[in-house]
Length: 612
Image: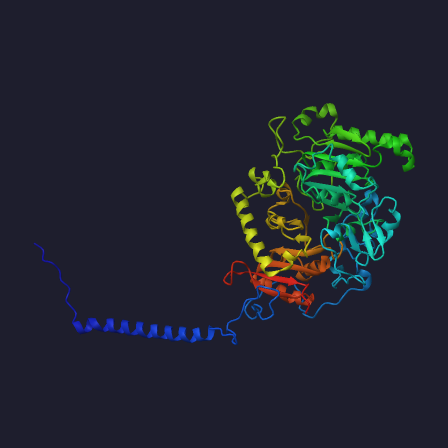
């Protein structure tokens, strides 16, 4: 039988030594902790005449006692930037309305076939102007919305050509130092309200079915201004041409607009973007060049979308004398448009007074079956329908997503606005946007609600109604714009052209508007056209592509003099950005994000309305 094994016992005095040593160390550590806590608590106690020794985080632009966050000694980043930290100089006075990619002097280098000169022609890297765009002499703060819709300061847009050449058509009048917009247009000289009312008898403009509209050759955007009363968002587009600053007038009024032209490249929008497209005497050769321009409108129209055409050749029988055109020429032109529309499978639903209306099919089931009979143009093959950044137009029909039945809406139906704003768009539901689900979409909406709440606690101008035109440089899912829907603002949602996920199509499906952009180039707009610019991760995205200084110069060019900027990025990038912001002569400060002090994402706030 085995005997139990016993370990030899240690003497009691030896066993006690480790215990005494452990208790002693614990006592000394505790004593040190309480003494330190007591000392610090005394220093943190505030009396009416005392100031805490710890820094206060600057979360409000109105606080002058807060100490700005300073990460300067501890963080670096390899951004492409100039070593010079001195303030930038202002450009010469003749650069007041400088548009780098629509420069009338630069465009002369290019041929004018298909008005190619009016396309974007940006300067090379070594040609970029690195100075601050000056404001016009006598510039004043623009009127707040909705007064800005009807009035603007002449000093801000000092061009009177339209007030003379379009005086009979009531585009704009000059009264003293004010520009007055009475709501007239080439096809609605008696007022846009009645014109839109007539269109509303054919197209359901008041039901929420029509939300996004493209206005080609927009004039001063009076058409879009009227549609805004119906909760319809219009992207007004026109080139920089003999009419001078028509897009600049539109933006000064607080209306969505950008420079653009139907020429060689696709319009900078994804397929199936707009519920309606409109052209009022926009001088586009719709049936010319193998019909490529009408096919481009077909590409950007949603299934079941409407095309409204007014002006020559529509209603030529009663207007050919006033247009000083031969009636047979006008009839031939309209017949060509009618024939092309049929070959695109469009259905003409009305022609009354000055305009005609066609409707795009909701799917291509019937069109494919009848293509030989209709002698339709070929369907585009192996071409991304949403690709639009410097992508040449082709004379082919952009195919709609596959539909099983004749009544099915290709790509999925969108809900009536405003429900479509917060409902997961069809592109997400159908899995067209990689990695984005309906659950992620809903989470993103909640995230931007929280972020906007943080922004409004810092920038009081949100609630004061000082912002109207807003630019989101990296819109992602459009959450920032959706969160802003309760404010009287509109947002230009920009999706970088080389973004990993092309989300612009689903942004349009939400009932929002936007465009593609490469931020190493200049945006298609005039100087001083946006009240607020939002940049989420843009600097990190472009840090190895171009100079951060050039991006900041473009932001400064399009920002109104008293505007604001919000830049979200990693703390390393934000520190570098602050140095460049100082060169821009901006009033800026670094703040924690809504995540708090221990998160690496920080925010650079710029508020130029603060007088320093």
